[in-house]
Image (cartoon, rainbow, N blue to C red; front, side, top):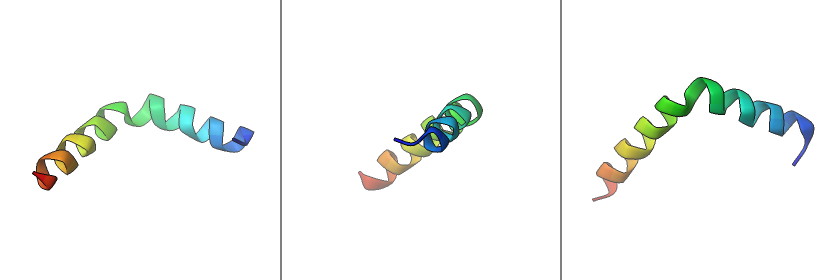
Length: 32
């Protein structure tokens, strides 16, 4: 993993953890 990817991941982790979890829940509820 490149440094740039790692920075982006850290940024997304900090900024979008709740959005990410919400998307995961929506996706999992869609698939059922």
